[in-house]
Image (cartoon, rainbow, N blue to C red; front, top):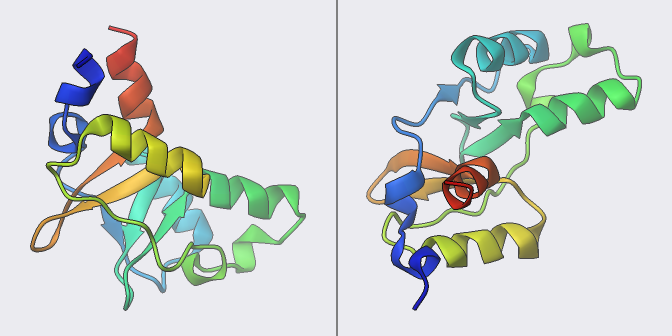
Length: 125
């Protein structure tokens, strides 16, 4: 068993999970991400969704007027989630399979977020 298989999501996840309301503007979401040094925020909608820096970049690249957009216009709904005890190699496989870079971590509630950056940073140590 290699060392990656022994590492669990809870060992690398960012806590507490950062959230944002679904009725916030895209500009406000981008500002909050920059201020917090985050590249993803859990959107407190029902069901919870996620907005990432990639979602915002896609909107800009598509020529959308970002000053007119809300988080709900670009967020990803029905997010994949993982439990804190999941081996990190399985989380990495999920990210590859689903083409995503962030996984909210759920126990009884949302408790953190693990990203591809968290995993690659760990591997480069």
